[in-house]
Length: 170
Image 1 (cartoon, rainbow, N blue to C red):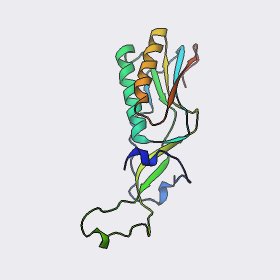
Image 2: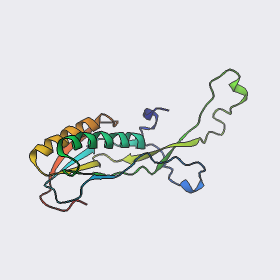
Image 3: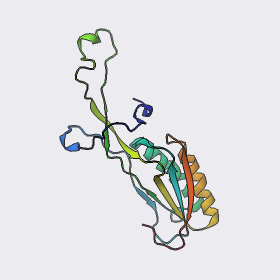
Image 4: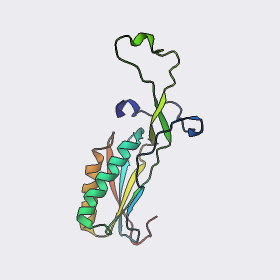
């Protein structure tokens, strides 16, 4: 199934993995990257609408931002952090589309579906990812990195710069 089928977070979320056999593994490798320390600026990626993000989209967004920023600032010139976690199990009722399939499937009769993916429900205006940098030149690089990462996400994200001034990065 495509991500467009899971974009709307309607209905009750299903988060109880205790009762499901064959749970999907989370695709996000790391939630924090770079070097922790005191930074001057925090560049945030905010989402402008209520939406549900799949864990594959979150991971590709993180990879795109980190690779772009690492080229300009170096490995120890920034600190990145994901602010969301995909808790919700997304299910899919797979249908067989072959000749003679009408004798093998039940249709919508008992359509619970198998757990295929994980998703995170995001509120309007919620921060998805943060990049901490030091200089003004690195702020521009962080904005460019997040702009490239926005392409990987559904919806319309916004980039916001917060003056951090030496507060320790969380």
